[in-house]
Length: 537
Image (tube, rainbow, N blue to C red; front, side, top):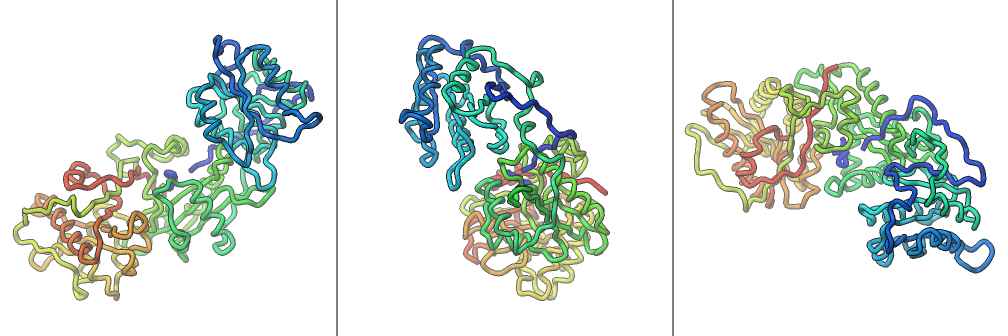
C-alpha cells in the first residue's frame, strides 16, 4: 500500500474501483450509425466551442489506404472543413509516437480530434496510449476521440477521455457521418451518460488465486514497477526478498481470463503484535492493478479476498492498511486517490480524530549529516553508547514493556532478530546509571543486518544512507518524561556517530508519529507521508 502503495502508489499504492452489481447493458449500434459513447464535458456540438480563426487539429493514424493511394482520412478533413474552415490534418505513426511536431500543432489548436483506427498490431504501441499522450499535451483544450471500430476491442478506455465517438470503420461515408455528428446534435443512445468502462464486458467479480513465487515473480515485479512512483522502485532481488516470508506472508493475484496475464496483485503479511506469540496483526501491504485495467473491480476482488483470508487466520486481532514489518508502505500514502475508496469499505480514515488507527499522519524522515546541529545539552546522569552482548536480554525486556504500552506492533521482533549476532552492537542505548531508558536500532545495507531485510528504503535512496528504527524511550516516570526531547536528541546524535563511522553520510528514520517541528528544526526532510489506518477484528 507504499503502495506502496498501498501504496501504496503509488503512490503510493493502486486500487481498482468496484464493479457494478449488475452486468452492463447497452444497445449495439447499427452499422451505419455514429454513436456518442461519452461526452462528459459537453464538448459537442463543436460549433458552440469554435470561433472564427480557431484551429481544429485532426490527428489520424498512418494506415494503408483501402482503395486509392490517398490518405484514408482525407474525407474526414474535407468534411470537417465544410463546417469549420480552419482544419489542420496531421498524421501520426504508431511506431514513432507523438513527436515534438505533434506537440507544436496541439499547442496551436483550439480543439483536437484524435482518430483511433483499431487495436494495436502485434509489437506496436497502442493508439490508445498515444491518445493519452496527446491528452496530456492538450491541457485544457477539448480532445475528441473518434474510434473507427468497436470501442470494446480497444480494451478499457481511461476516464481521461471525456468525449468518445464511435463509428464502424473509416470508410468515406462513415467519416463524413462522423463530421456531421461532431457539429450537430448526434444520436445519444445512452441518455444517462454511462461511464466508458461500463461498455467493457468485465466479469462481475474476478477470480483470485494464490501466487506461486517462482512462476509469478517476474510478472509481479513488472506490475510493481508500472504502478509505484520512482522513489519506491526496488531491485528485483530486494522485491523478491520482501515478498518471500515463509509462514508470515500470503499473496494473491488476478489474471485476465483470455490471456492469463497478471493484471492485479495483493501482498499480505501477519506479524506478531508483541512477545506473547499469540496475537497477530494482519497487514494488507499493497494492492496493485495494471493501469489499463483499473475501475473494473479487480482491486475490490483482491481486497475482499485478502480480508477474508486474514480474518480467518488464527490469532489475527487487528487488520492494517500497509505493513509494519516487512515494510512496503507503512500505511495509506497521504493524498492517495484511493483514500475515499477505502473509507467506503469501512476503513476508519478520519485524520482529525484523536483515536489511534484512524488516519493520523506518520512520516519517514531523511537527514544529511552536514545539516545536523550537534546538541550541546547533555542530560545529567545519562550516557549513550552501543549495546554489549551481555545487555541484550535487558534490551528485549525494556523494548517489550515500551512497545506494549505504546502499541508499537512488531518492534519486539525486530530487536529479537539480532539475538546471537554481532549486530547486537548496532543497538544504541541510553542508560541512567545501570538502567536502560532508551534504545534505537541502526542498520546499514552492506553489513548484513537482519533489520535491513525488512526496511528497504534507506538502501534505495543512496549507498551512503543508513537507517534508524524502532526508537524506544521509557517516559512512564515523570523524571524521564520531562527529559524525553533531550534523550531523543542524544540518541539520534549517537546513532549519527555510529553510522558515520560506518561510512554513511545520511540517516533515514521510518514511521515517526508526531514531532514534525522538532525534526525539521534538526535538519530532517520528509521523505514519505502515510496515514496509519487499522481496525480491530
